[in-house]
Image (cartoon, rainbow, N blue to C red; front, side, top):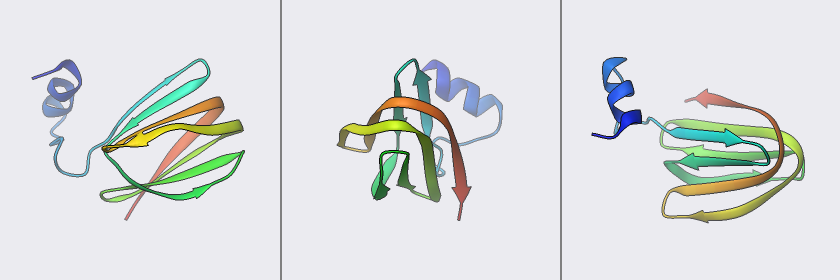
Length: 85
């Protein structure tokens, strides 16, 4: 069990139960368990998750990679929100 999954497990969250992983660093964001792209603009990218949506806000955003459940967004990321649904 990798580190992130072990932390989720201790918090009582099952990784297969609609959980996602996000890594935000200077100039990019990596998002796991993405099911699709809802909208794509320079200041906002909305991604479909298994149970909801992930809204990434910022400036000069560009989708660098998308496939096999992974998405990489580059640019100045100001924040992101998860809308469960």
